[in-house]
Image (cartoon, rainbow, N blue to C red; front, side, top):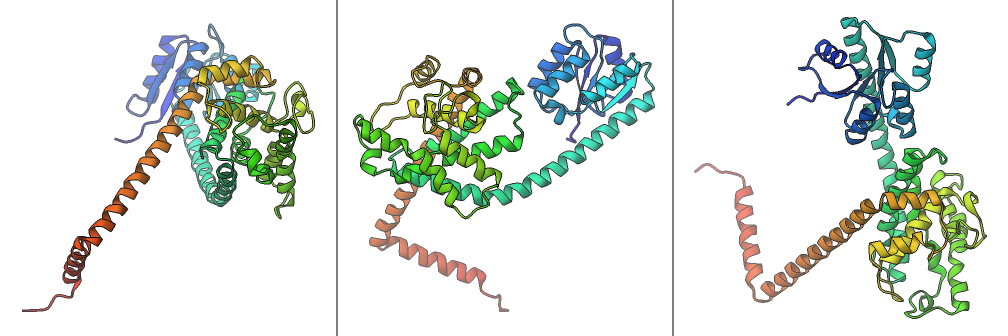
Length: 400
């Protein structure tokens, strides 16, 4: 079946919506309808596949300008073009619509040819932009793949030395990305782009790289650390940043700069009672703030040599009640808003780990089975028969 683009028509007049559908043709597009701005926002949230929004201005609940403002707040305007279709033809209305990101403006009464041409042109333009973005994304992916591999190797070295599960880095990266996306939707206080979210999530894997410098008998001590031992452990944040500064990379590269921030400051706290520098509030870079919260949640819900794992709800209560230090109130809201999503993501990584373990067990069973068969002289004979059969099948044909 040929792909049909989806158009959301937002107008409080059912007649206007019907006319637009008739003009554009049910056979050409898939249509969604909303009779006010509130419904439009709810549909956009549930249907990211919407390719174009035809938006009236004067409506109950939320008007067209309000919808545009919300689309800007959630960055939907970057992905979904908007054509304003309204009886309002005052220049102030048109100017405001364009300022808020509308792609085009059509006034009623409708000219069917104008509506069809502008809709098709807008869809075509955005389709080309999406293809271009996809091409660039693929190039960036190939470029970053080696960096991600090296980061993964380094971070897992720290985990294995620290007797951790091997999932800590995956958990931190997953939670960090989820929190950043929630934060981006909640506020424009931190101007996070998609590139920022990707960089911070990737760099989060290196947050504990400085633990390479901590003696194993302290890292893996099953009991409570002494004051002196804890002071040694605390040095890992500054050591990690120092290590990254010594690496012969361009220190102005965004990934390197963010990784240094996270390494040094992921144990700082919102109230200034963290380490190593006692930074307070937004003196702490948002990258380090988010990784800090992700690190605490995963530490609570994971089994360690010195503690059993807490369940999801207990961990959330401990964090919100301030038992693990103070965090940015906005991030705490993001944590609670996305609690179910985080829990599900953690379960999925555990299930994936179990699948990998089962796969490893099957491979080991196959290996042992092959050894037994070879010792009994059975596998070798079968392999020879198989080789002989392949040789006969691949041999050149001769005339009889």
